[in-house]
Length: 560
Image (tube, rainbow, N blue to C red; front, side, top):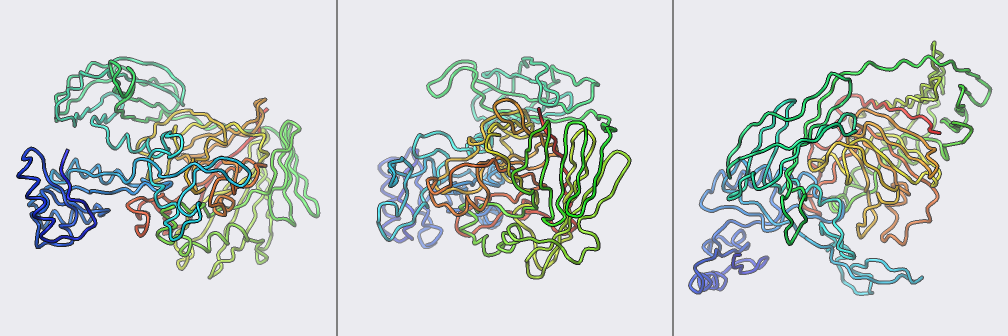
């Protein structure tokens, strides 16, 4: 505990005298005051350097010039809506800079009040929902815990990992354990090592550890990778030996994971197909499937597998995500608005010699569409479908960057399926949603939930539910029929709404009735950011690199 003279109140002699009184009355605690940053005349008001929402770079710069006091971020990683991106940069700094003492996330719980809409349905209300003006609207919706039911938000997964006091750096046969605790030996926890192949459990063993506080030690792993082809995940997990007032025995307090590949031979599909080119459509048929590509509509209009139509809308290139609160704060919409237009209003490229272009191969057929996008200057992209005899469709998207347009929020393809496909299972990062700059706390594994569960309960609907590192994902109805997507560590989401529907709603009750399961398979989505929610943009390394042509390939196939 420390005494605080307050914050956001500039400086002055009165604050300084108050700090001196604290020290006189209680010499067992430090005194904090953030305002010294604004008034260096009374620098002695605080026993520590305290700043709000400094970047990691600015903290490093400050401490390079002034090492007179320890530094804390009295508020940082503003957790408004879908946030906490790049938080690891701050916690990593605590490992390399002894004067940086960490910070305090703003905030813990979304500040909201239960209210009923005009139809009597309950929702979490925020500023302005009671007719009060002026107001900051949802600006206090910045918790890592939801305001209504106090459930943890998806951001908690990342926060927990960044704050864990034991790290486990896993290689193929060893693990380096670093104990960052000040007083607790790792032998106070159970250490469990799990081995999985392609997301399936193989083995679990106990590893006895004895790492003193502020020490590190390397151990040989009690599990071994086999020569059977596949992707192996080795997870080292530290768990409570006994229950406490805050968690039950077995609760995981820290983990580390290593992923290793034993190379597989690619499958060769030799099933026969029939290709029919008509005046208006191109058809491709196999034993269990048939699909149709429209010349007029410039896209795949039908994919029937096992006698059932699966596609509700032509799949189209997508470059947009619903803005998160941090995007709104840094005016992302103004900078990236052309990519929303490109996603909604791209059209057939009339200059292409053959559009679509049909190429017949020995065991497949490739149909390629070329699109013009209404950006300034205009830009182009292509989408090709290679159809194989077992019903697998390999999708390839290509874009040659236009320098003036810069990067984009997302690079992928959007599908619409019937809402009956309400079940999601995926092999990738999880279990909570993950993003380019918020995936450190995830584990590679096989997870499942309902499509509706991927709608995070942020006060204002926004981008949510994304999965990074996805190798495959299935959406199915309650009979098990549906479709499986496969990719090389792609981004994947399955939600009841399109990005545009999410963006148009300021409350969950403003969202339309559910008719579809909207799938977005993407090479990448930009990070969510989180240094603050009013100015800071996503860190450059978590943006889509448009310094070279963009190519994204994945596949899908029906399930019966």
